[in-house]
Image (cartoon, rainbow, N blue to C red):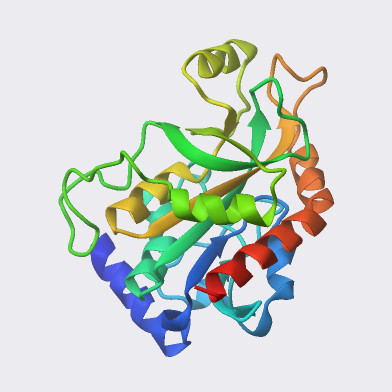
Length: 271
């Protein structure tokens, strides 16, 4: 069975659970999985029940799809994601979001925890993604063209929606804006690598999101992104980096993230 057939099987299953009514899908990054507990009238579907979906194994990530409403808006919340560094291929890393898109979900909010590179970013800041740099060396579009995944050579001049970014900024005017660099991981970057990333225009760095964005853009979804700056990057921070720090930052940001996403969803619900 090829990737398109697996995505189609998952999408048909999700449609039976009502996922096709969702107007927004949210991918919740490290430490942010508890936001899904705020979804009203929720239906929770463990990833392992969805045909062909891989299950996250990283601490701080959940493993369920939660369907319901936030501020009157029908949503689909992925409480975690799988990563390339776990050994998954790009198709597997994108299978959940592709399935939701195939089921009819039109727009996506991709969140992540990231290391801050730009000088004005501090741990705890939230950054709207205005563009990305894919340095994973991987793409979900590699190989034969498959039905439903978009064109062979999709344009990427406007992956991240200015309209949705504007709604995020309206929901929280304190938000920063910047370019997210996606690397393969799982090791954190060296100071020399961070200097390189800064030189090429990256403002924050992480180990997710970019392959999802590539896949969804090719499928004509409307996309926005939000990075929680969980730590300062190597060579900028004055202490060693750790995953515990990333998870703790996510927990600390729960209140602000919840308020922001609620206002964002309310704006979408108003049209």
